[in-house]
Image (spheres, protein in one colour):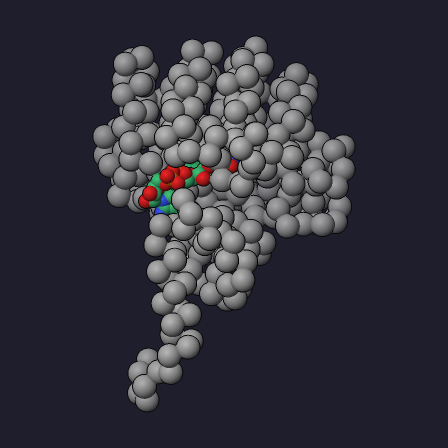
Length: 307
Ligand SMILES: Cc1cc2nc3c(=O)[nH]c(=O)nc-3n(C[C@H](O)[C@H](O)[C@H](O)COP(=O)(O)OP(=O)(O)OC[C@H]3O[C@@H](n4cnc5c(N)ncnc54)[C@H](O)[C@@H]3O)c2cc1C
């Protein structure tokens, strides 16, 4: 954990081209056709997908509107290419930090387009400064009749079990994940085992409330526990799904598919790749080694003729 925090602190100092190179495996590429190619490969392997237009670094209204427009293009491509994919959106990319009403308008346009195409939109959950607004907007749109909308809850947040209780009347479709943002101890469990335990409590709570759950983790132990819980409840394969990020734990994902579980791969694409890349690198247990090797390469002169 101490090593993790040190790496998290030093990552912003790593040169952008190196971040981009190390993070390549986590991102489909800069364009929609990159995402389309990656989703086709996942579909051919029996995996579903969720496409994310990267954009959380935007700072202007027109950029937020452009991201909403990019999602309409994503739905067009999903339809034209026959992809088995829904979409995931970050509310900050749709303007949450600029203006709540702008964000709502953008989200409604994405969800409306999804409904016309019988598709589905999942709202990602970002740092704790956005949790209240995200859940408020989720409720507002559900109460306005948008059924094709799901949300994410983070097992590290102390409030999550309360959030499950207060959302229960909506029977929401929920992705449960550990949570990736750096949060203070007053708000979030900090211990590895505490987060795991709360993940399972949240999973049970969501299933008790009759929710469709996306079990989003690459943690071997949580995947086994998740499998045990859905088997004990006798859930059919279309009553839950597992979810994983592009470029992470592929062997574990392949095994889930071989064993007949639904698995959805999160496929991000776009020009705004930096913040997402930093978060993925921060979680990669091998990242310290890669960065050290690169730094060493830059400080130790290469011999003539070496590549
Ligand atoms: C589909 C999906 C959607 C998500 N959406 C959100 C969201 O909306 N909001 C949010 O806060 N978080 C989200 N997350 C991130 C999540 O909160 C965790 O930060 C992330 O999944 C790592 O936690 P873990 O459960 O895999 O457990 P960990 O203990 O972090 O990882 C388990 C094992 O997986 C492998 N691993 C994990 N990450 C990497 C990596 N980057 N590179 C290489 N190996 C790795 C390692 O072997 C590690 O030991 C999402 C995750 C997934 C899978």
